[in-house]
Amino acid sequence: METTLLRFGIDIGGTGIKAGVVDHENHILGQAYVPTGAQRAWQQVIPDIAKTAQEALQSAGLCRDAVGSAGVGCPGTIDAKTGTVVYSNNLNWKDVPLAQALRRLLDVPVRISNDANCAALGEVCAGAAKGLQNVFMLTLGTGVGSGIILNGKIFEGGGPGGAEFGHTLLVENGERCTCGRRGCLESYASATALIRQARRAAEAQPDSLLCTLCEGDLSRMNGRIPFQAARQGDPAALQVVQTYTAHLAAGITNAVNIFRPQAVLLSGGISKEGTYLTDPLTERVKQEVFGGAASFLPEIRTAQLGNNAGLLGAANLF
Amino acid sequence: METTLLRFGIDIGGTGIKAGVVDHENHILGQAYVPTGAQRAWQQVIPDIAKTAQEALQSAGLCRDAVGSAGVGCPGTIDAKTGTVVYSNNLNWKDVPLAQALRRLLDVPVRISNDANCAALGEVCAGAAKGLQNVFMLTLGTGVGSGIILNGKIFEGGGPGGAEFGHTLLVENGERCTCGRRGCLESYASATALIRQARRAAEAQPDSLLCTLCEGDLSRMNGRIPFQAARQGDPAALQVVQTYTAHLAAGITNAVNIFRPQAVLLSGGISKEGTYLTDPLTERVKQEVFGGAASFLPEIRTAQLGNNAGLLGAANLF
Image (cartoon, rainbow over all chains, first blue to last red; front, side, top):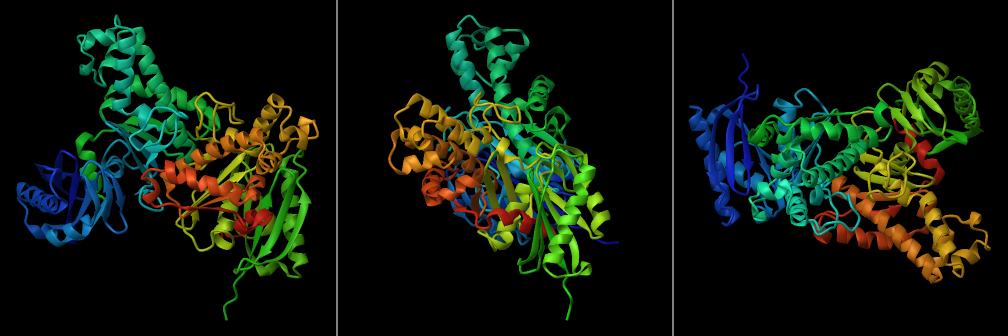
């Protein structure tokens, strides 16, 4: 019988580092977590990444030679070919030779990719898009991350800084985006954007349920409140949610016209709204897409793996 | 010595069908042309496609068994996997089994792809992007066609109707596009769009050079006049060209943020403006792109192969 080696899957975030030992049925046999301490230099953070992986191994009761590879998901612009983190705002890293440094510490081959890419690959390997080959995923969080799977593999773009679908235009001369441009998808479809719009609506309509649910303190606005108020029929909230949905649908329509995936996945906090979000999105995309309702249309689904998607996808870089 | 078989390259347009016999150095050894007669049923058009290929063979002084394959570029939504033209507005075709029918007549394996895809592949194999692996091309004509080359191959999308970059959003609730949506790149960056904007500007400013160059008859407006007037410093024309360039730059920026190609190619009538068009585009894209001027930036070039790009690319489907 052939022995198949296990894989480390590692998910580096601005707040914490998660590592897991993953088998070839995508079961997580053991995992560990440490805070990132992103204020430190990368030379101090990387040994902690290796340590987290080793703790995951211990928690699974396995020894070192059970694992044959390590995949790492990392926020920011990644050069997957060279294994370099070109730039990561969350980690405050620039040109960090992550794969090389980690390989030295873990003594296994290391591959890296963007965290949103890894999350998409995780859902394809073990989650909401299991068995599909062409999948487009948007993570609706503080920003809008995109993960594009073509023929079962992560699409990295021809060079670093590709597959940044969150930074495609939606509104000419629109809201200022974190990338410096105006009107990007991220500046209309992130949770941050939804909260901004909900605050504006609440300010303009102080009698709305949007205000009530914040208990009058708009600094307490979050991404759930507009949906909660809309579900109760509050006109101001309905308007905010409808506008948000229209922008997100426009972004998804663009993605469908480019990639024609088999499925579009949504993850991140806002995706928890489920069919209240995906049903109207599906209707709008069907109307707007090139070729219309009769064309090859993807199903719009919510992701399933939650916080483990990145780790599982990272393991599947091998 | 191994005998390498030649290839048919066929380019079907709404007006004419062009066929060529192409060798492995991408020389066209012979070619032929017939009008499409697109008002006829496809069952009548396809024999003419085969006939054109055979005429190309004769004009090269070659016999039938010199050719081992046929690649075909066709306008519209193509299912490359099944060899079917799903829908072509220009040809008035729907669900036409082009590859199968042509295979029967030519007695060689047949592959088909969208005409803009073939043009991009042609430029990669033998033209302005020779030797590059990741290239994004826009054809600025009546519409805006896109051809995306990833790892040296045409990117078809996960299903028919993908790679339609001309139908991604630029302006929310903007100009009505031919696809039914509002504000697509095509409705701002096609020659048709430029002419529409130039006419509007000429109407509003009847003293402008835009009007003079049309000899007062705005139905004579074409895609060259606004550039010609702008080069002479006409304020109305400068405004039209600047707005056109800004929209095109926004579309290219989106493509760079998604694909990070090594080169962006422009073809079609408007690309003949050369560096007068590409220099300001390059500047704008550099400013707007994710990661800015320090990121991995493609060169923006004009295509080289003109009307032969589609035929050469089609031959290279094999």
